[in-house]
Image (cartoon, rainbow, N blue to C red; front, side, top):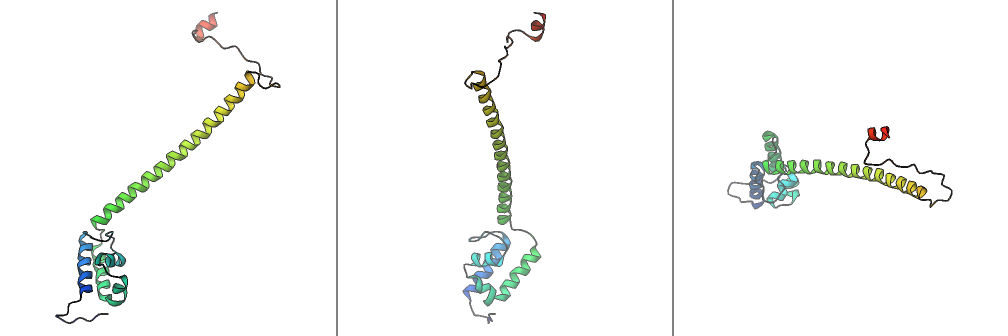
Length: 148
């Protein structure tokens, strides 16, 4: 832990304190805005060990201020909401893709069945015992066909 006397200027401490204020205010310059010690180090432009080994008092001060604030900074919450929206869209697209794949399987089965029926009706299969039924005329409705 660093012991500072009045009048001593420690640029690392100053950078950490300034970064702490920016993160808690929700105006990060270099980090994601998440309220963590690692993001504080990134925001301050120092290595994380400065906070975990050298300036423990600043780390503890930051954690206490974060706990007291008990809210997510606006910059980070915006990214969280964007992330949640993208996750929802991704899930919707995956479901849509699964629906399309299922529809494709149904269509493939229908096309295969129609191809087999067509082959049987056109006589391409010599052992086919299919008798084609005459089709009703499309211009006559059900009543007209019945009255014939």
